[in-house]
Image 1 (cartoon, rainbow, N blue to C red):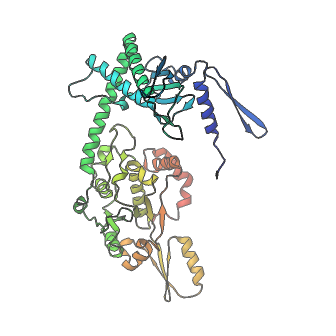
Image 2 (cartoon, rainbow, N blue to C red):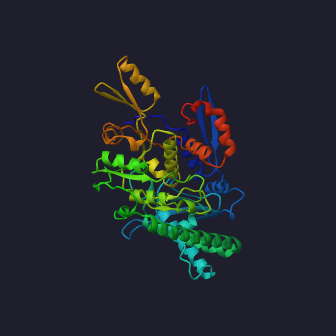
Length: 480
């Protein structure tokens, strides 16, 4: 049963292009109806995967494209019939483009199977042998692995056989033992010959693989060091200043409230359900993580405490880069992370700074729907025996309209620390009555641009934005 037949255009174009790649010289014509006319695209690779790899490599590749072809006969087991295998492989080493694609009997193998295993075995073995033979390793070096090679290679294999064993019904991988063994032997020998006949290119490949290996090892060591330093165990939370844990060990129900200051800590602590709700106070305003280098970020006690409490390790990929750090969701100790600040300008800024920290260091929390904004009321309205809570001016006007001419009193929130525990429980802590805003990754690029505009180094852009849009927020601005 198909509930949606709106197949994206890319599905057709990618499928047809792949057929053109593995069917040398055959022209595939794709017509897409747009209104009353047709947009026509033709796909044809005269020399099949050889032309495809050359197209991907462009004119700035590390080495010249190579094409290998052979024919073998064999059997998967002694008691099975012999069959024929044709192997076609095209490759090029490149710092700009990385790709691996496997095809068998003109079908795209998404998961590879035997061809991928053969590629990994042959290339790691042969490149490692070349590095050793040419004294490329230092005494302190580890050994290269497939990741170091995959980072610089374009590799496409198209094979054909008269007998094929697929991994399952989806046919995204083949499992023939003979095909794997034949390809492994073929790739290893061809690579050996290629290195002998192309000494300069072999040196380029070897040097870059060594660089990749050393970078990977350094990054892994940095990750392990940081993980040891920052990874939280249950008993570590007891040593984090002012952190209040909950009793439950069930991650599916545990919640943590990131609150503003010690006064909010006191009110929330009285109002919470100690069984599954924990509290982490922020002492002052945290660093603007969008503008800081990683070294400075991890020197901040508040930020490292927050990371410890969340129970996840953070990996800095490169001190010099602005890449987001890797984050281990398997170590997350909470089902919900709730940012709970005062309903004023300072509270909104602290909320934004916390979100910025999560956005830069731990974006997976947002992507997997773990981060919420816990709204706190701006007004408490009492009329006779009835109490109303307004979270903004619009709701306040609606309450006044509902009350009509009856006498009422209005208490404006002075901050979470000033609220009664009963009120906090009802409006902020109780899952049945509180208001949560899920922080989603929708329009992530626009969100990133706005974070950078408001909290980054683009001063002129920020001034222009305030000039153009400031009047829209004048009522919320604290200009007294």
